[in-house]
Image (cartoon, rainbow, N blue to C red; front, top):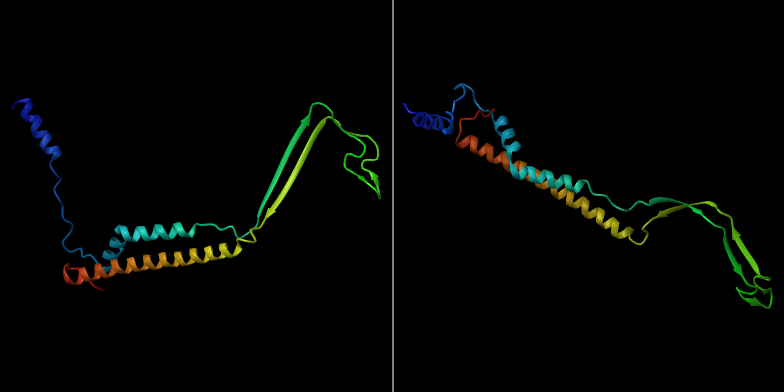
Amino acid sequence: MSDRARGIIVLALILSPAPVVAGPADEVLTLEQAVSMALEGNRGVKNALLEGSKLGSSRTQALPSFNVYALQSKTLTDIRVHVPEGAFGDFAATGPIPPADTEVTTPTGRKTLILGQVAQPLTQLRRVGLGVSVKRASLEIARQKLRSQRLSVVNDVRRSCTTRCPCATD
């Protein structure tokens, strides 16, 4: 036999489908096994489950938010500001403000500024509450869709088992 013929035979054996081996004849698929297998592989059930998990992970802004900012700087030279007499006004009751020429000086060094902020969206609380209600309703709809999909699969499997296949109906 030539090398070419051997190669064709080996290629045919590799590409040929493997024979299907049947299981023991006395093994019977129960209804519960058929239902669980159908629920595991059903795309509609998986999609409904994913939709419900997406809706359950949303956040709202109904609670206040807290922010803290810290800034630090260092001046290289003194800061000097000259304010002339009466720069902020001259009033009859008090006279000129400031009353004399003033020079304000800050020394060199590190300056630290810490700011705190608490924000509560008071005007949007009604809209946030409505959004939470919509999310709850959407989550309940997704749960009911999942339940409906599961029941549909179970009913289809039961109907199929009772009419077509020799399943054991306990």
